[in-house]
Image (tube, rainbow, N blue to C red; front, side, top):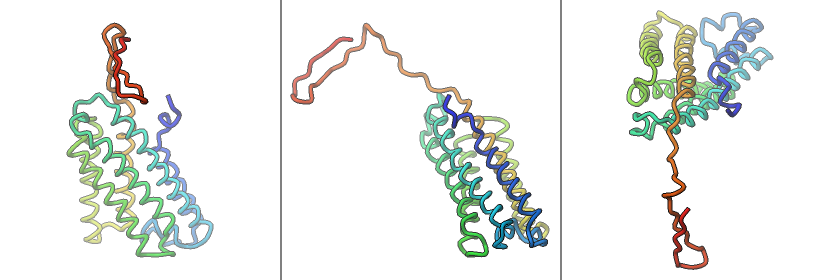
Length: 227
């Protein structure tokens, strides 16, 4: 098995991000960052913010890389559902990659550099996550009972969290923690489940019954060769 198929990319990304947040929170000069949002950890322009932004970039890259084994697993699956909806093997990895790119941009474009660009990157991450949950509803249901439950739970968290954010019950920091935690949990289970999908059986060939028609590239005559 290739090494990239053994690496739990999403779980590793979560570990990298949590470590960078903890390190930045312990060393930041902005003691009130938690009253606003996590992004304030990356806006102080010091070593603390560099740690945070680097962690977000690394986490985004790892999540983007998780699209590779997911794509391979979905394309090679023997599931009748995926054979009927071949687009799932392209759409899901594309949305995962978009989520990863959005996180990378969040790290590359901190609030101190451009509030507008940073917010657009954050919106991209939220939109990619929402699109993944929608695709799960239409194309991935039944893949795993745990995955189905996590998808429903994540949708509930996002809806209630957004309502709490709008009404002022929750701060943006709390919403971000709840939203990202639920999405990353769902994405990790998806990655692990897809890796275990049964591959489609290869077409069998009979040495006595197969016939290849060979056509020389230098002429138009065909010659039948039994193999």
